[in-house]
Length: 246
Image (cartoon, rainbow, N blue to C red; front, side):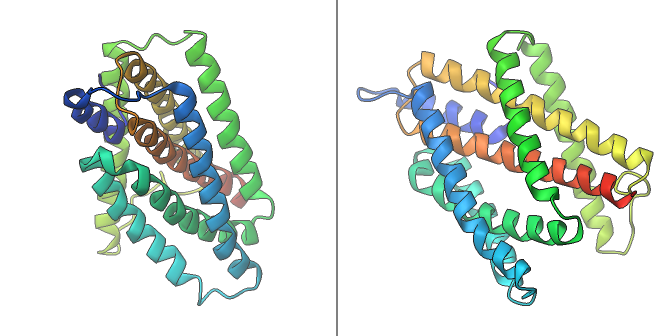
């Protein structure tokens, strides 16, 4: 089984040798655990959001950077050891909640209402992509998987190069601005992130059919959380570009 979400793909590959007796992964179980992770992220996001509301920007650095570092470390750990997902996934969700709360709060202070708009856009995209997947409108075949994998890798490479160049004061022109090129780039990235959801749905469904271990419900929820965080941030970035043009 393959996916452009390397976290989920690695986890299911590792679990192939662990299909022992006991409880198995189910779609409903994965959905329930995804809801739990979203709830955890929402709770922890409230703290940095309140700091922004109180204009306490100095205190905002600790939860934002602490969450970013903790989330990265836990994501790597869970990716390498999928059986750690039952405790790692909630920690990741809590850490990402701090990051998302800080970023959303700052942008919402600049562009009132943008955070709720991005959240609605993310949940709407999730619902639409799930409907598309369940309706089999998109055929998830090997060619489709490779195409999304290449596109996702391309976006990751652009972000990595941009980050490295940023250390030297060099900015890639156009794509990160609020012009037509920048907006077009963000639209493409949002579409790629949304298509990752289709592959994740497909992989989770096949994992349940093949009898993946019960802990893979947490791992599947964790992987979906990774994609949803990415999608939300890209939608937030896109909306900020539109609002900055007003």
